[in-house]
Every structure is written in structure tokens, then in C-alpha cells.
Length: 241
Image 1: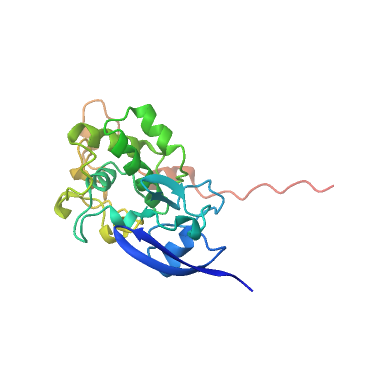
Image 2 (image 1 turned 90 degrees about the vertical axis):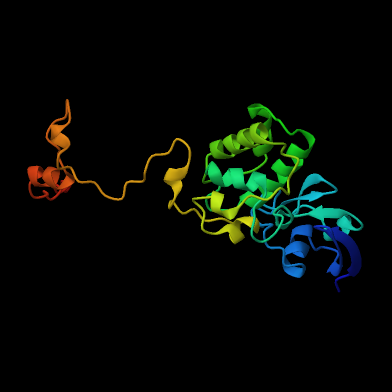
């Protein structure tokens, strides 16, 4: 027979109460009872960092901590970062601008670790930022966009001002703002050419006229290459023993 316990804690500034089993993890409490699903469950071994939340302002792995251990504590999840449903906070907005978000699975935990770090050190070096990111696994971005986002944020304004709103119209390239606020994201290349240093996206190419450019040879298309090769030959049969 499982034992249960009534606990009280503060989650994203609101007092919350729950009855949990002794074995219930903090991430399961947040997701299943409080429906704060921006905190993701990944490896469940404390390695990937997707379940990272702040406990009394310190990053912790929600999959390694029991819910009963959070009794009386102050918990912050990724849902607390955006000031309202129509805006992202500056850190989230810079991650969008610098393409630091792709599939979105890891980003909730990364945001919480970066937010905690920036409160203590608003102007980190690149090495310090990479040290924070080393606690998280991201299979999409390569991390460089995240590093660039933190650098841009620290140079543009005080990152401690976490709730200064960012207008939605200034964030091209993302069509799922609600998903990003909840720890998920989806990338849309529409408008990406508005990013500093980016070129217009190429939707199609017409080689006509390319040969008139200085130093250019006659353009060769993939269709021309296929025609020059002729019919595809069947592979040679393997010798039989």
C-alpha cells in the first residue's frame, strides 16, 4: 500500500497544495497535477537537463527530486518566464533571434538554467555561458545560437530584467510563440531573411543569365548532369562461389 502525503509549496508565485505518493518526483507533480508541461521528462537519470526547474532560485533536476522534498519551497518553471501570453521575455526573444531553438524539447530546462545564471551574473563570458549549457543535452542547435543569444542579451540590456516584454512583431522566424513560452518551439523560416546578416531565402533558382556573369561558365543543372551520364547501369553481379 503506497503512502501519501499532503504538501504545500509555491509554484511560479502561486501557493499550491497537493497530495502525492512518497515516490512521486517533482517533475511528475508539476506535469501531471499542476499541468505545467513545459518541464519535460527526458532521460529520467538527471543527465539531459530537460526537466530542470528552479528551487529557491537554484537549478535542480525535477526527475531526481521527490515532490515531498519541495515542501515549503519556491519552485519556478519555464511558464514563469514570459510576462504574459502575448510576449516573450528578453532571454526567450534573443534565443529566437539567434536560432537557439529548434525542436524545443530541451529548451525549457536550458531557459531555467540560463535565467538563474543571468540573475547572478548578468554579463557572463562565453566560457561561463558554455559551462552552463554543458549541463544540458541539445541534439538540434549545436549550442552556438544559444551562446550568441546570451552574448547579445548581456550587451543590449540588463538580463536581470527578465520580465521586460518583447513585442511579438519583432520576432520573425517562429510561428509557435505559445509553444516556446511553454518549453516547446517550432521554427518557421518565413521572415528569417530579416535577421541581421542573413540573406534572402532562396525558393527557386533560374540559371538563365548566369553565364553572362564575369568569370562564369555555362550553368549546368542537375538535369544536364543526369543526361550526360546516360541511363543508369545495373550493378555488376557478385561472383558466385
